[in-house]
Amino acid sequence: MNKEEQVIIGFRDLLNKMVWLNKSKMEESLKGYKSSEVHCIEYIGRNEDPNVTKLAESFYMTRGAISKLTKKLIEKGIIESYQKPDNKKEIYFRLTEQGKVIFNLHEDLHNEFQERDKAVFEQITEEQFDIMLSFAEKYNRHLDAEIMKQGIDISNRNDFKK
Amino acid sequence: MNKEEQVIIGFRDLLNKMVWLNKSKMEESLKGYKSSEVHCIEYIGRNEDPNVTKLAESFYMTRGAISKLTKKLIEKGIIESYQKPDNKKEIYFRLTEQGKVIFNLHEDLHNEFQERDKAVFEQITEEQFDIMLSFAEKYNRHLDAEIMKQGIDISNRNDFKK
DNA sequence: ATATTTATGTTTCCAAGGAAACATAAATAT
DNA sequence: ATATTTATGTTTCCTTGGAAACATAAATAT
Image (cartoon, rainbow over all chains, first blue to last red):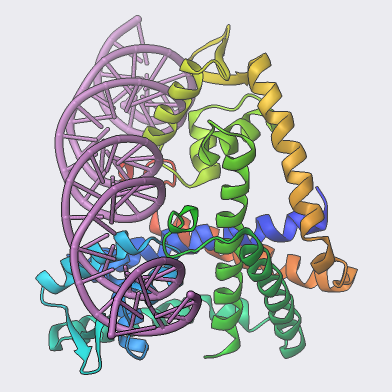
């Protein structure tokens, strides 16, 4: 196996493991909330005027799936929707007080994860970080261009067939 | 956002994009086969005596899900199962002739993807690859240890509760 | 040798998410 | 000004995959 593949596989395994581990820790601490819900809460808490489309693009999910997820969060009283006076199409979300509590619990947990992995990051120099960041940026840009070529709309891959 | 997070998010986005892009290319070229099926065919074609458990661990999926997937591939005539004379418990898989055709088509596609992304990799020096590989290895080892601590069995996370 | 525990694989039930069709608002073209 | 196209969000139907219970074989303990 060449190094190109090794890097990709190494990071893929890494992220898979991280997702598993954090997910199980999360659903242990934040009982009653799925990790997808918490992820959604995190995005809504951190971003300006988030809507279904932005969430879908960020999570690489369809708008339909996000629509259902946000609906559930509204029913649970974790988020609420709002609109702007000059736009009757877009629907944005914000956290309720209850949502903010979960958001903060998640932030704590996030710090806990950082603490857990600190030992690994301490071994990495600034230069090494920059090398990895530069690689990720280059590759991301390249794939963005390829995705454009393909004409895939991440937020609902079907529409492009129209 | 600190560099630790940036690296993780950068690679996460990268892999998400790659999965999307390759998936849609794949299901375009290998019509009639889902990317999960092709992924499974790839693993079976490349590894010695693959069974449900090994597939599950490699894909970070439950044994139940893999069991269903392999069952479907057997029904489609793409793979077949075999056992060893001295072990009546483990069930292994191999590709049928039809499966080998798909395997080879997938290999071609894989090369095509490498070709597509060559421009990115050409800019990376040997030293830079080694830095990234070393980071991935360290982090993987760290997470393996954490997963051990948690007592999570990736192949069926529930069993450990017994 | 027998009992207990662990490993492997399967099945049933359920939830999450994608595909496609749809509704409506906004943007753009004519 | 009106028609057409595009953007945004929702809904229905269906597939995939997880959770949990189960069956059986193998490994281990007694």
